[in-house]
Image 1 (tube, rainbow, N blue to C red):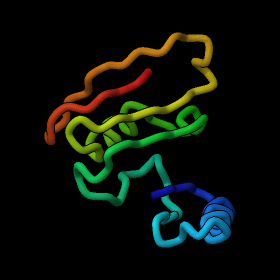
Image 2 (cartoon, helix red, strand yellow):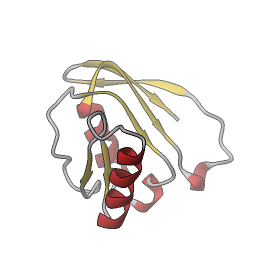
Image 3 (tube, rainbow, N blue to C red):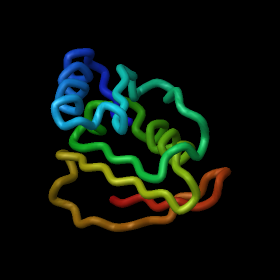
Image 4 (tube, rainbow, N blue to C red):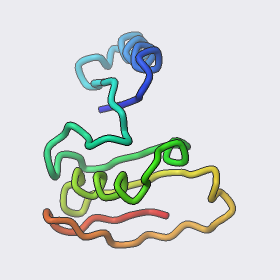
Length: 104
């Protein structure tokens, strides 16, 4: 599942997936990541966010949403250009579905 705020990005992702015969395995939706995400609890094994979290207001709410969406033992990986000089750390994140890991 891929999400983006911009229809053009989703259109491009769908086109690339089709060119690689992945349209049955990959789904893309226009979604505003700064609002509650339209997916059920414990839905994803992993969540990645590359260089976008610094554009999303209210990051603690976004992180809470991601924790809600992760299955127990799920993994979250995001990059933030504003903190690119910091070292990474893996932290446990609890949610109502069990534990997950937050990679900072």
